[in-house]
Image (cartoon, rainbow, N blue to C red; front, side, top):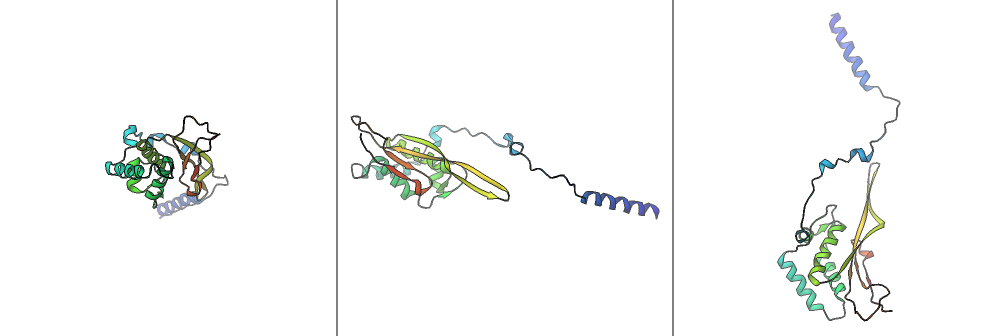
Length: 189
């Protein structure tokens, strides 16, 4: 009987000991301690794979593009309008996708949109530039953690007249945020 009472008392003390609280504040782990680079697998893609579009999509774009050339829109604006029409149901998705995956799934992050834009620009023979935008971060909040992400956009340059000096190189900015998508008019000096 004494042995059973001793066991019950010992188990009770252990349970009470586990339930007691420390007055020490619990510090959250540092983000650097949570990052484990061994969990990420590098992906090797050739440029041709990254920017490749299905043959039927290439033909559809080139047909659209050549039919509108020489009209009232510059080549960069034609590309912008094609993307605008093609991606009407485009959804933000935090994974970076290839051009083919982006067009097929109709989703991707801002880098996916830049990759897709570059794929079409290459088909059309247009030059591009890329800009990291830090003034409009994409973020979300879960519990007490705020996730902040940089933003990336593409400028498709308009074909230039070699005999004209430009104050600003004309082109179209293609941005994930529709309100920020603008055309930069060709204004020669």
